[in-house]
Image (cartoon, rainbow, N blue to C red):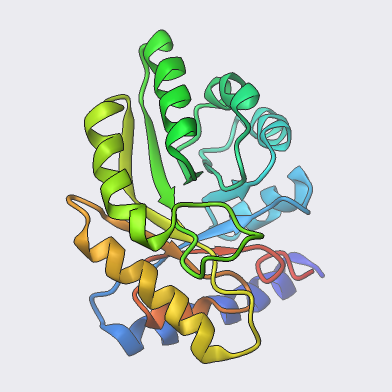
Length: 224
């Protein structure tokens, strides 16, 4: 696919995002993060050239490599994967724009220690396991608000900006919708939260209609 064909393809994705956004409100803004975990730096660059700025990776090593290879470009890097405690320093070396998957109090406390030692801060989202699925990481809906406030008070170098969740793993649209609405209801209860990150290539329109203002699109953005 050449650049012109690719731009036409991406314009169609943008139209779908816009249509879903306008169903909510003309004032509802949605940010798209292009998840580049299965794509090369050249493919990231191609997407950058037609206007995309925010990219997400779910492995620290991949994030480090691509951010180094593309350091001349003004890209916004998001880390969206499960972070092991022994990889925290590697992530902080990159200093991403946003860490979207803060999924436990233990991780928050360890992250706080490392941030404090470096005299730096990191913008983060609290990951919520809104469908209570064993295969997913994150705080349960029942503990999310209390944990969010606890991290705010005990981890000053972690700057919580809102929440992230993955839609329920189900073919039933109503089940997926319920998981998104659960996350959105928590988001609305949180002090000073501005980001509700929900929705991927297969369910982003539903997520937007449920209140998401940040979506994470991988295969759709890279036409894979």
